[in-house]
Length: 104
Image (cartoon, rainbow, N blue to C red; front, side):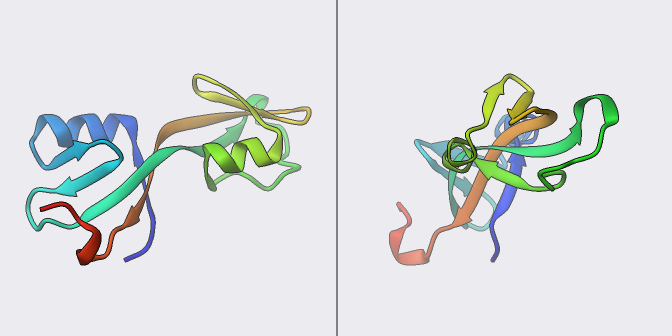
């Protein structure tokens, strides 16, 4: 299974519906026990002001380390890369965990 982006809103809803259990940086699907390591990330939605995207980031998902590597500054639902401001959606990047590393 590939990596997936989970918005904060979706994670909150799944938690309230008891569809997932989050413990530390591990999210486990209650229906089938699949587990994911999650880390904070953002999804780039658009360039603020509907300008061109000189960094080709719209539609991508970057975690905090990747943002730092870009020299990006994040504030709430915005990220600035160089001279370009982006509207982003906050959430988490989930990496599937192999069965042998999951907590039981």
